[in-house]
Amino acid sequence: MSNIDINNPLLKSQSDSVGVKNNRLVVDTNPEDFGTFAVTTKPWTDNNMASDRVYQTIPYQKATSFRINNHTGKTIGIRRRHKMVVVDDFEDQDTSDWSGSVVATSNDIDGFYSGVISSIAHKPITTIAMLDDSEVEVKFRTPNSYGSFTVTIKIWDDPSRIGLGSPASVYTGTNSTLSPGQSYKVVFRLRPTEAKSDVFLEYVDGERETILDDASGEFGTVNMINSVISIESTDDLTVDSIIYQQKVDYSVEHILSPASATYPCYDNISEYEVINLGSDPMNYTDTNVPVTLSGFYAV
Image 1 (cartoon, rainbow, N blue to C red):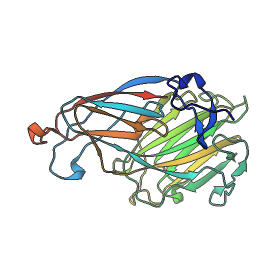
Image 2 (tube, rainbow, N blue to C red; image 1 turned 30 degrees about the vertical axis):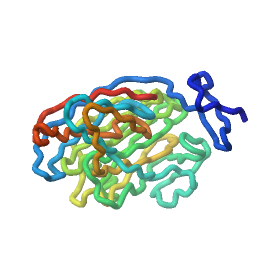
Image 3 (cartoon, one colour; image 1 turned 90 degrees about the horizontal axis):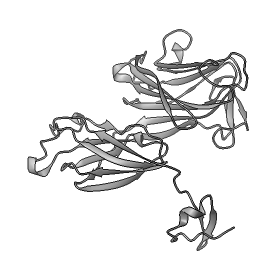
Image 4 (cartoon, helix red, strand yellow; image 1 turned 180 degrees about the vertical axis):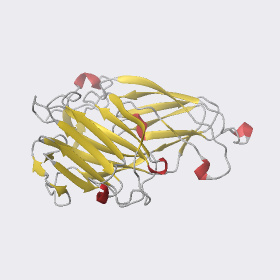
């Protein structure tokens, strides 16, 4: 295995390298591209209640990290939006907690194994109350067929509603909207208190398309604690993996002005949200003033 000089300022020229440095594995993971973004905070009034605070999600951009700049004269709060929970990645090849026919296969998308669904199957998502802006992500590969096929993925507040009632949110794709043998990711953003959802479809290149915006759904009365995901296909559909992005009200990290800070991303920069916490000259009462932050991200 080759050596990598991690102090070499021209390390980028050694791209796609793996080596050992001081008995440690070193991998050159230089970003392939960069881009810029801007985000404007939402106004709110500080009544010294955390529940009064209004956060603004950073716009979606595929990224491995980003730097955000604060030259607003205000103190900015930033925090992660979600705790990631793996609903199923099929790596243990155990499908016993699915209802319906699911076959584990080495025809993977993530990791080594995936699941194949050729009719309909469903599985629990969480047994914990779901906060607004929680998300469910499903990676799938369409049937490798140029004939007609339909893929339907639904989120339900309770398994008893499957086949009898309306889902909380739904995505449907067909051979006219999806290419055969192609990988996609569908993202459900759920707002139980409003009985609303948004649905996004992501492509291999990271582009995101809004499928449903502010759509109505059935969220029941128990805060989605019995929520399940159902997946239906008219042909063999490869699924891997299913992630529940549980919305969590984390404490904020402060970014003073002027300053900038860098944060890692699992998938994209909208994993974070920001808030204007006000300024010392105004005794931190100027939280109702929207301010705009800029930054750049690395892909």
